[in-house]
Amino acid sequence: QVQLAESGGGSVQAGGSLELSCVVSEYTFSNCRMAWYRQGPGKERELVSSNTISGNTYADSVKGRFTISRDNAKNTHTLYLQMNSLKTEDTAMYFCAADWGPRCNVRSFGQGTQVTVSS
Image (cartoon, rainbow, N blue to C red; front, side, top):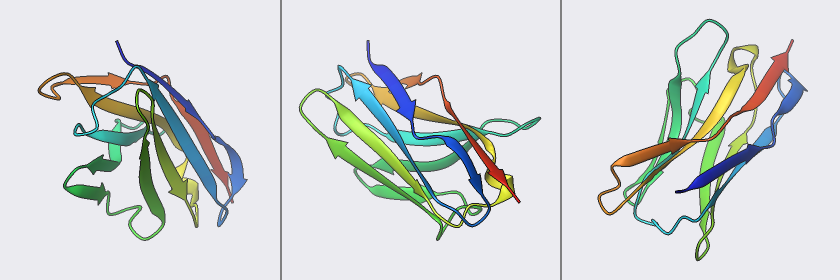
């Protein structure tokens, strides 16, 4: 069973930057998708950015400001999200997700890390 642990959240003023990290243990699925989601107050969970062997995707609201990257070590993969030019509307709980299994058809989420952007 994979284990995900996010870190890097915090409080920042608008225009600032944060980098989120997600360490995924017991994970050997380099060809499977990993992603960042977020859920703002009173909102549904939304996909922020994903990383696959085909490339990266970004929600329109974060394009040009956020960058996803991934470090594939042997049994531990780390997913990053560099967030620049943060806006108050970026305030949310951010969750890391990792797909795994022979067909990459099982998805696990981390517990989340809070990002709060103030004006």
